[in-house]
Image (tube, rainbow, N blue to C red):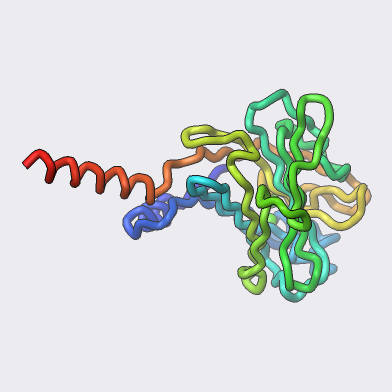
Length: 241
Ligand SMILES: [Ca+2]
Ligand SMILES: [Ca+2]
C-alpha cells in the first residue's frame, strides 16, 4: 500500500531539499474503479477524496501535506484526521473526536484538522492517548506551537499540517505508523476516505469506516545537519594539513 516515489525523493536529495515520502491514494468514482463512493461522488464532495499524503521532517517538526482532489479554497467545510501510533502504548481504536471510525491499528496520537472556513485558514488540534484516555496537547487556536496549519496550498487541494516531533516523543530514526481520513463536521460521521484503503470506506454518512493496514514513516536526519557534518569534516581536513 505504501507507494514511495523514490525518483522524487532522490531528486530532492540531490537538490538538498528535505526528503519526503509520498503516499498515493486511489481517487474518483468507485463505479469506475476509484475509492470515492457514489453517495459522496454524486454530491461533488471531492474535497473529501484524498489523492496523496506527503510526509517529511526537519530537526524540530513533522510536516504532513494532505492533498485532496477538490479545491479547498472553494469549500466551506471539511475535516482531515491524522491518526498515529508511535508505540508509546497499546493505543486506542477510537480517535479523540468521537467519529464513527475504527482506527484498527490503534492510536497514541490524533490530529484533528479543518479547512472549513472558505480556504482562509487551516487549523487543528493535537491529542495524545496515555493508555486510558485522550488529552488535548495543543491547538492552532492556542498559544503553543506543537501543531500549526498551513493553508498556502489550499487552491491546489493541499492541507498543510505541522506537528512538533517532541510532542509526539519522536526523534531521528524512530518509526511510527499512521492513517489519514477525511470526514465531515458531525460527531458520528465516518471516514469518508481513508489513505489506508484503495476501495471506498463507507457508502453513507450513517455507516462507519475501518482503517486498513497503517502506513509507516521513519524520522530522517535533516539535509542541513548532514551538510554541517560534511563541513565539519572539511574543516578537520584543513586543520590536519
Ligand atoms: Ca481517495
Ligand atoms: Ca482511499
